[in-house]
Amino acid sequence: MINKDNAILSRDGNDVSPWQTGVPSVVAPKPEGVGDTVHDCLIIGAGITGLTTALLLRRAGKNTMIAEANSIGFGTTSGTSAHINTFADTTYAEAESAFGEKGAKGFANAINEGFAIIRENIREFRMHCDFEEKEGYLYAEDEDQVKQLNDVYQGALKVGVQAEYINKFPFPVPFQKALKFGSQAQFHPIKYLQALLHQYLQQGGVLLEKTFIDRVTTGDGLHTAHAGNKTIKAKQVIYATHVPPGWNAFNFLCAPYRSYVMAVKLKSHAYPDALVYDMQEPYHYFRSHVIDGEQLLLAGGNDHKTGHDDPEKAFESLEKYVRKYFSVSSVKYKWSSQYYIPVDGLPYIGQMPLTAKGIYCATGFNGNGMMLGSIAGKILADLVCGKESPYQSLFDPCRIKPIDGFKEFVSENADVAYHFITDRFHIHETDSVKRITPGTGKVVEVDGQKIAAYRDEDGGIHALSPVCTHAKCVVGWNQEEKSWDCPCHGARYDIDGKVLNGPALRPLEKIATPETLLQS
Image 1 (tube, rainbow, N blue to C red):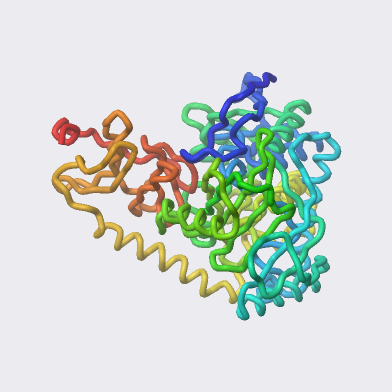
Image 2: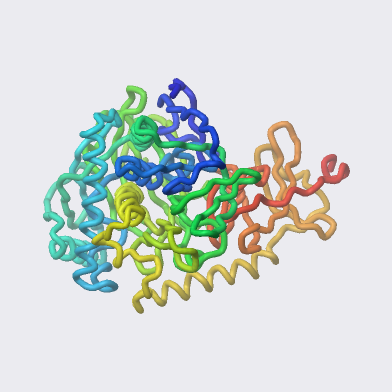
């Protein structure tokens, strides 16, 4: 293993998060004889879910391999705000309404156990990942929010999560009522991920980066993963890719969202020594972190469905909100990341529907990927080892969806149909692309041909088909992350059409740009 210092780790967007800089990266040795070995388990994806699963399986004596399409932490783990808490975006009251009191308690236990897995890994392996325990605060600003806050409070108490009403909290905003949750935490997600990888490799695990698995076939009791001309054989396969690729049930059961975060320097030193959340819709969240020796305020929120709203306006609104309550000296970082909201509120972890036995997945973590990704690793490792998990039934991807989620199911899929049809009629007709300024992109129509056109800083045009290769919806331009985002199922592509994340398996089709178009 070789440690590279001072490299900026790559991620699935143009904006740089603070987790990408100044972290020595662990480089795995290139394995030999990949196609000749039959692995006990192939894990596809090297984020927090994939690496947690892989390390647990190696410790259980399983012969494992991780195949990562890009590099470790490329996706949501490098874009998280890294809050570790005992309450979730799906409240325990909501979980009880959909899954009963037993289901709500099981969900709370899973959240707590995911937290415990992170804490225990840090302790056992002496990880240096900026882990700090903090108090958490959730506050209401009006009467409607006070009612919602009381539901959160009552739901937490019923499942054994400690919470209490307080009169003061470390955030300069007027409020009507606030809850305090003790024993919350924060950490540096990429430092933690690199430490997981280091332990996994030390224990004989194998990692293949830059290996995009485009399909898995099954025969003679074995699964064969295909990555171009390369094949990997395994007895069992896990998709730890945030959402399983291709067409599957999760295209209808999980909705893609983007969340926005910025790290700012304050003129004063009034940084909150806590994790703070409001109850607006969409909500905001705050904490502080020392990055490269400099304390910064991390503020996030303004979440919206991928490809639906303007990312530039989302950042503008977030910055305006932060400046309303804090004296900001400068904005040091800003970035966004993607997550998936499950239609019935709970994640899907286990045997993947409509696939051969022994193909597993984990998705639908909502905004709680650090805890749920960690417990998913434990659940998946148990399943691969033939053990039963106490969460197996609750999070079963093949579960029958509760009736409470039916409205969301219909709404999300009607929205997909809407974009499939209407986006084709809102493409700008033009006879040139000269209005596209350097560093920007737009979907246009030239001489009857629809083009996703990006003009680079040197004036060159990168021309692609705007039709998403997953479900044939029309992509839109994300100016902040310099990507083409699909509003239907969240597939995202870079300026050359390469898949960044989401369910798409193939890149956007390149268009040979006519010379007249380049000169127009």
